[in-house]
Length: 207
Image 1: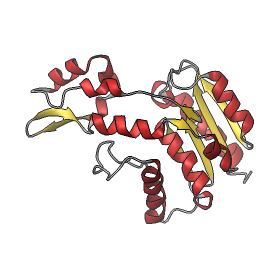
Image 2 (image 1 turned 45 degrees about the vertical axis):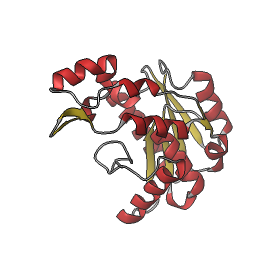
Image 3 (image 1 turned 45 degrees about the horizontal axis):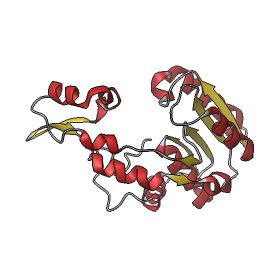
Image 4 (image 1 turned 90 degrees about the vertical axis):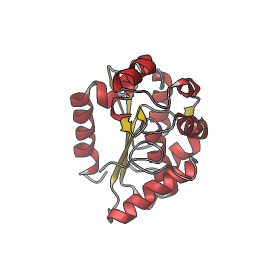
């Protein structure tokens, strides 16, 4: 089950892009679906959402899988404000997005007035501004089993920081794959095998 997070595409724009809003959405989805303490997996900002959910609602989460994001975050997406709002064709939009287009394939949409993205870049800038900061307290607040997956070529999470996260939080496994930030996309088979081994070796045994 995948949560389409506020401002990310198919969902409506949220009233805000606060940390509380994202965590509240995740908790509401679990309640709506009647899930009993699911394993929660998140990539990048979704990983922060996952471990903050576990910190604030430990009764809702049985285990965590956090993909390539740290406990201290300082990111800047202001460059995306230069992306076009609309373009006459899909090809024109992709051309204007430049190098960023390869990350946005699933976000391209056709609208009555042309081609554009499923989200508003200004919302993403606001969202990232809210997630920046020191989240060590949240990372260390829960003690459920956790898997931290790090891409060794990531430009978002350093190896030293990932190792510190794994060392400081009890009941945490650390895995590395030879990828960049989007581990699941670059090496889907390796990522799936890593997560499956964690689930089979930790969660199903109740440790």
